[in-house]
Image (cartoon, rainbow, N blue to C red; front, top):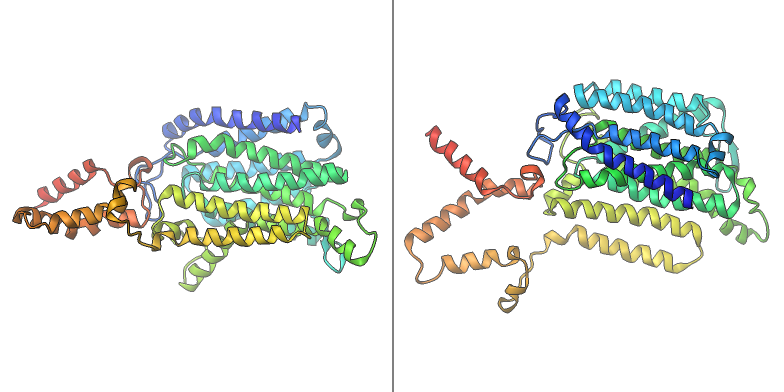
Length: 452
């Protein structure tokens, strides 16, 4: 565990220290695209954050190769080198897309080639443990197609969810933490060496995300871009492929005792089929909904829009930070819920805890729909946003209120939708703020006056 912690710290430190220089390089290189209709930020923000994340990945693999215990992963398996080859290719494609915005079909072809490179070097699905059937061996073509499909789906799922500051990096970090605990348990508790590469991939992915998050939290100073989102998606898929298709369930020696006990003991074997799905559950759901929504409208599945899950949260009324935290909550609930069930699937408390937390998550999702009515005596104890409307209404309807004041109040309320509509839709302010500054409003008023 000490060597894993050292690898995690080195990866996070290298990513964190390189993100600042990479930001300056991105500004000089002109990797700051104009604001698009679907964006939620107001100022052009540099991309290419994936450059720092890629070098963090290289540093983590280099350090792990020189450690005593983790060196065996490189000596007994070719999977780390396969990951590095595929990651380098997908990272290069992402850098070109961040700078020149290449076509979506070209990116899709590059993703498939990167997955094929990993398959050629041994990182592929060899068999699948199917409940009530057993261990099913796959042919070379079946394993290749399934591996490429899983890599492409995971990469695009993570890419789709990268729409808010710190959202993709935080969700992938939470998912990789749950995946690390699961893979580490398989390796240590059952003594299966085939789970060691997936454990290493998970801890390096955590370091990449943790090192980049301080620069990417709201308001973000730099975006990871496709060079980062596709990279962490590929690393996430590589860990899932390694522990799902490379681990032999017969090595666990779980086929003993009664049939009922065997079924309960076999849960850790079947969880690899579910854990990769739980890791990308929310991004995959967003991906499926986006494809269905766009094809229903007669658009291309790759056409960008503002209908993603994080956009819906902003439209409901959540702030930028609260929308990100809600997505974190659901990602942690699904990932760690599946992990807890794999540890003790016979406990009813785990199921009840997941149900209660899911109910809490639903309440948090619908929280902006409930308009709080704070008593007058308690208004001083609540934030101003819960008392501003009542105070303004009382001042406007006061008997001593002057006619100009009433006219100003009416004019402000009439022009209010124009200024606050972007805030309700979740459009962030200058440099990531959640409101339009007074200076911006004065500039808009001056422009309107000059046009007259």
